[in-house]
Length: 82
Image 1 (cartoon, rainbow, N blue to C red):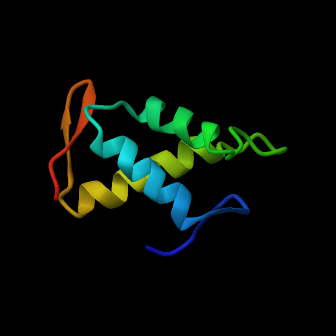
Image 2 (cartoon, rainbow, N blue to C red):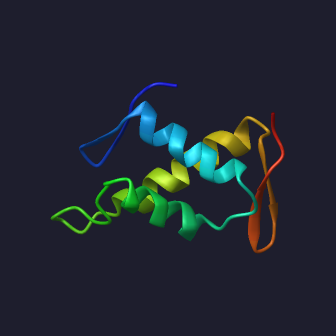
Image 3 (cartoon, one colour):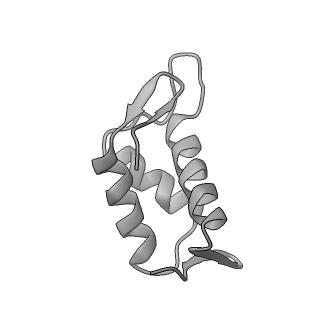
């Protein structure tokens, strides 16, 4: 997994791995993943009010859904991959 850039902020592989572990730990909502990203020191908003943590959570969910690792069981996402 490569480093990700969102609104000028670098999201390291370590942060992405931590978010993946959160996803694998049980059913979750996107907002919980966003809160975990903030806890891992990503800003919630940039100075221009661009959403960093939310966008990081969204991009990781999209990536894992496309890979077939996630399933939406409203209102939660559930890890179904290896």
